[in-house]
Structure formats: structure tokens, C-alpha cells
Length: 359
Image 1 (spheres, rainbow, N blue to C red):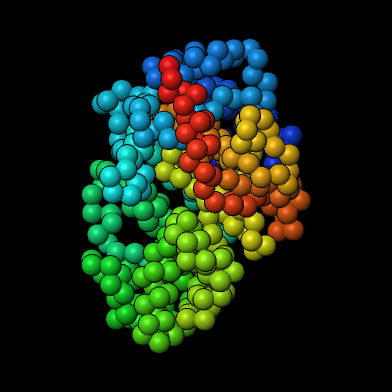
Image 2 (cartoon, helix red, strand yellow):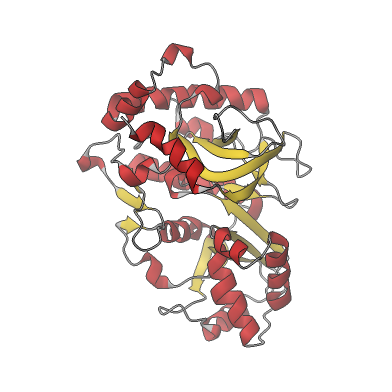
């Protein structure tokens, strides 16, 4: 297996296409063999697909599994007594949730990776942090939801962490104003989930006709665009609305999922999501899963060097996206940059999952 600590020493957006392909392929090939040997359900899937390890030559050859399999099967490559933490996806009530098991080493590498990626956008020093959520989300430390995991993960970048909502999800204006007075003139980090920020922060401030000055803030937000699309809120509308109520100029969306925690795709100042050296995105044609060229939309496949305790290193998501370019974003970061277009239609996803479920 690749030495992950050595990879952590490489700057997250410093490798060009060929250098990154070599690093990723070597690591993903090792992970595929490792999970094949250590996870019975994963082995069954690869056997069903007649995977020939000798035929794997590029990152796009590495077999992928649909992300929804984590909702339906126990996919773990570690023994019960090695489980350090179990993470769950945010499912709506009644829906099955993904369960991801972590050992100590994987959990630690997730945290280290997140630090490397996010510090490239926020700088290395910790900032006073305003979390646009309720403290009740992280009460159960053993079963982390995606929201709780996100808050705890990003909390490492913050000092004097303060929640903007109370236990009942109401805007805690007193706590916010006390926090802003205390840190006047300093850079401030804000973190939250897109829909939560819109629903419980922006809309409440608007209702109260209240303006805050957080012009020195950096907001990192992710998840929940689906609900905003239903309200016809675009990325531009979202940024404009926040600028209106609290003078926020520095806003970074990110794309990530509980099945590959740590490997987030951060949005640069040009509005592009970026793949770091720790992970990558591949776009697949919805009809036959062939590779889609740059500029063509399709299903997003994500690969990551992180998952050692479970076979989540190559996953077909339920999202549609488009790669905009590689190694040539005006922000100067190397690697692929892309946009998310939304969820793909259920029928297409069911067809894809059925390939695995029939056997």
C-alpha cells in the first residue's frame, strides 16, 4: 500500500495530469486489491463483474460501485473490533442511510486531508468560527450524521466556535452579535450547509430586517442545493443574498459526501470546483458508462486514495456534472475543475444499481 503520509507532504493542487494519474492509479490499484481480499461483499461484486486485475492500466479502468450500495450492504474491510467510528449519510425520514465504518488510521487521514485541502483556500491559521447550525447536531459522537461529521471536520479550522442557531434551530441573534463584537476587525470563518444557511440564517435575517457586518468573513458551505433549486435559487442568487444581509464577499461552495469524507472538492474564486491530488472526478455517459470528454455532461464517478477501512475508493454517484478543464483554471490550481448540475433521474440510477443487485 502507498504511504499516505508521503502523499500528505505534496501540495494539494501541485501535480499535473500525468503526475497525478500515476499517483492515483498506483494508490487505487493497491486499494482495489486490498478491499478485494478483505471485504467479502466487495469481492462478490468484482467477481460478478469479471474484473481482471492485469487489465487495469489507468485510473478510469479501476472498477466502480454505485454509492447507494452502502445503503443496502455491509461493506467493511476491517473487523468489528477495529471500528473506531461509524458515519451515516443524511437520509430523509424513512429512507435507508449509508453506513461507513472507519478505523482510527482512516479517520485520522480524513482529518489531515481535509486540513491540507481547505487551508489552501483559508490559510493555515485558525479563525474565530461561526457555525450556522445547532449544537444538537453533534450530540451523538458515535453515530455521526453527514451534517455532524461536516461540522466536526471543519471545526479544526476554527477557534472560539459559536453556533448561530439554538437547540431548537432558531436564530440566536444575541450569540451572533456577541461573537461579531468580540472579533471585530478579525478574519472570521463561517461554516454551514447550503440549505440551512438559506432557510435558518438568511431568511430569518431578512424577516427581521436585520443586517450584520461580516465583510471580513470566509463562508464555506456545501450540500442541500437540491432544496434550493426547488426554490429557484442559483449560486449567484445565494451569494448576492448573503452579501445583502451580512456583506459577505468570500463564499466557497464545496462538493463532498459521507462515503468519501475528507476528500472535498472546493470552489475557487472563479466559481469552479477543484479536484485535489487525493481524489478525482470522472464523468461517465449515462447510457453505457463510457468516459465522457471534457465539456460533456454525465454521471459523476469519484475516486479517492483515502478509504482503507471500507471499499469506497471508486464510486459512481447519483449526481450529474461536467468537467470544464484540467490544469488550466485561471485560479492557478492544477487538476480537473468541474460543475455539479444536480441529481440524475431515478430511473437511470436504478438501472445502474440493478447491474449489481441482480446477483
